Image (spheres, rainbow, N blue to C red):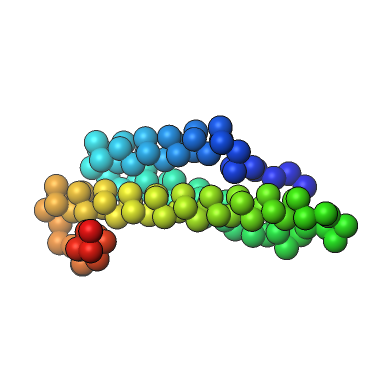
Length: 113
């Protein structure tokens, strides 16, 4: 079974850098599509790692399961970062293009900070 290990520090830093770059690309072009790509990618990784956890062989000593749980934790953090970035860029694009916003997506977040 192949595991895309994103819990290693080098992979984690590179994925974080790519996610931040996609968020800032979306800010520059004022479109929420680049952060949405990162969000979809990490959601697919969550699904893949969850399926792999259920398929861990019974004879495993727990190292594979603990690695997959660490990957799932990193996946959830990256989904949070890319989701907040998506909401931020979506708010920027609605203000720039003067579109009617159904709701202010980040008011719940920035109001508490």
